[in-house]
Length: 47
Image (cartoon, rainbow, N blue to C red; front, side):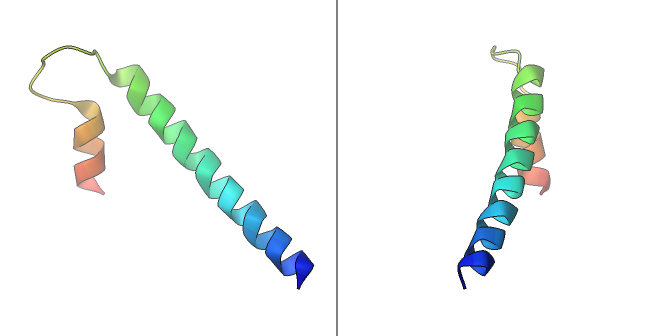
């Protein structure tokens, strides 16, 4: 049972790391100004 929980945690960590990578990519594409097209919002609404 403990090993199963560890496997679940490892999977969740991998998923979170992937999400972190995606957010870092999106953050680097953000210009931080008033442009009408926001890469972050575009990516979030397309999923």
